[in-house]
Length: 99
Image (cartoon, rainbow, N blue to C red):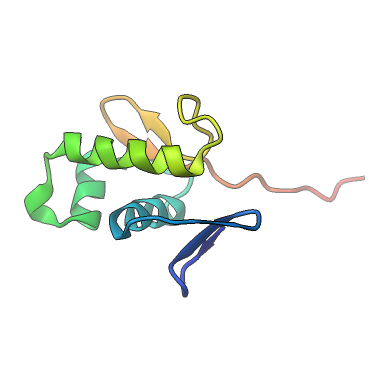
């Protein structure tokens, strides 16, 4: 759960301590859930235009973030990779009230 007003991330009752960069990556991906965000767009939104093309820096931070929020970082459920393109969070599952 991301609390945007408090800049806090929790998983159940446990607060996940993120760096400001990790928080910005996570919140940007969450706000664009269901859409692939290119590496360059993410770099621009999180670090600024002068960092576009610094994909290694992004990959290192995404890996750190996965270690903090994923139960199994080698098989992520929250931050998915589109190889050669970027990252995405799956859209939230919509519950249906059909009987």
